[in-house]
Amino acid sequence: MFPTEVETVLRRLEAAGYEAYVVGGCVRDQLLGKQPGDYDITTSARPEQVMALFDGFCIPTGVQHGTVTVRQSGRSFEVTTFRTEGDYEDGRHPSAVSFSNQLAEDLKRRDFTVNAMAMDVEGRLTDLFGGQEDLRRGILRCVGDPGQRFAEDALRILRALRFSAVLGFSVEPATDRALRKNRTGLRRIAAERIREEMTKLLCGANAAEVLLTWPEVWGVFLPEVLPCVGFDQCNRYHCYDVWEHTVRAVAAAPCVPEVRWTMLLHDLAKPVVFTKDEQGNGHFYGHAQRSAAMAREILRRLRFDRRSAQRIEQLVLWHDRQLQPTEKSVARALRLLGEEPLRQLFAVKRADNLAQPLELRPRQQEITELEEVLETLLAREQCFTLRQLAVNGRDLMEEGLQGPALGQMLQELLSAVVDGDVANDREILLRWVRERMAQTAP
Ligand code: ATP
Ligand code: MG
Image 1 (cartoon, protein in one colour):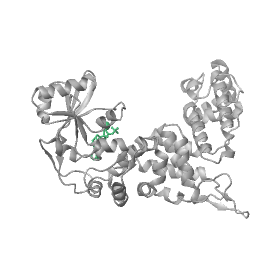
Image 2 (cartoon, protein in one colour):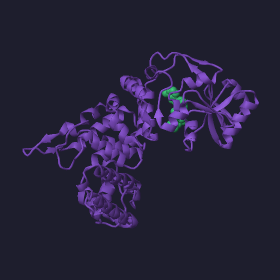
Image 3 (cartoon, protein in one colour):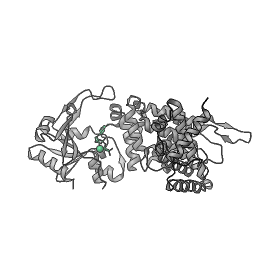
Image 4 (cartoon, helix red, strand yellow):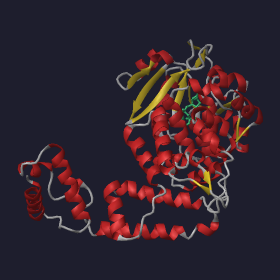
């Protein structure tokens, strides 16, 4: 039932006289018939006892929290001593963690009923809060008083909505009321943790409904979203308000975090740049640039890594650009963006279009044509990035170039090769460089 490594750890603990269970998310996933991502184990053994038992095969990852990471046949498991948490004072950290010998106490401090079940090595379930029933009915419900649980740890608000997006579960009414009421607690949660939860949420199969249902929650850490909600676009290209269009675009995008985040952010500036002409039609001139600037600020705030942030900002900036399905136009985009980002841009354009009225759907065909041109170009193995160029910086240094002039020459070479003005051949390129240098020499 469990992977053999998990069974080994559980049996070893039991044989030494301790209680041991798999617990939390992996029990939930197992009961749902899904493959659990990781297995967490909870035990009556204290960290030092766990360490002694698995001598040499464990890492004291968080002994102060009672957690030891046990390695078994190349896999790692977190083994945590039953715990109860003291009062939460600053809404973030438990001020005291006390070890207790009670499984019930351990389960009581878990967030939702579906996450608060334990299973022993024989498959016997401990379900003290109706987790199985909620799992069957698809309901997220806090363990204990929801107001108190969200006040203790506001991250649980986002976890609830993330599980709703991923599992397609509904949020039980009292839990829903409490999470809305306590939403500003999210201001005290580290940006990284918000980012991680949002990324999972955005990739959930039920993300659209969740995004539409809880705008005031996103507003706590993404206030830019609020003006989009209900914003009428007054435009025949748009049958939805900005937020509903955004949400539909998120759901229409492939489950790639960078692409989903791009869809979330791609139109944020629309309310800011909105103008109305004499006929009463709405326009959004420059919205892509402004949205990209807002995206940059949001990505910085949420402490995205540089690479992802640059990628998302770039995709937002380009989402609306017209690309012709010609080799010249696609080759240029390929040179400026690179292959992977360009493919992602096509996915962004598809999703954006799928969130527009039905009569505009023929544009899907235009994107297919762009993709076909890209495939043709790539199949021909033309040269599109500096790395693929037949000469490199060192070659140019030997020709006597340096600094900015060298970088500029490389870019010129690349343009010339991409535009088909010169072949990507070392000797030809070097000759071309010498000619250019002779021309520009004083
Ligand atoms: P997944 O791993 O699929 O994202 P999970 O439910 O396993 O979901 P983890 O973050 O791995 O989530 O946490 C493991 C378990 O720890 C949860 O199932 C829950 O029982 C408990 N837990 C995690 N975070 C909290 C929290 N903020 N408050 C209370 N219990 C929590
Ligand atoms: Mg987990």
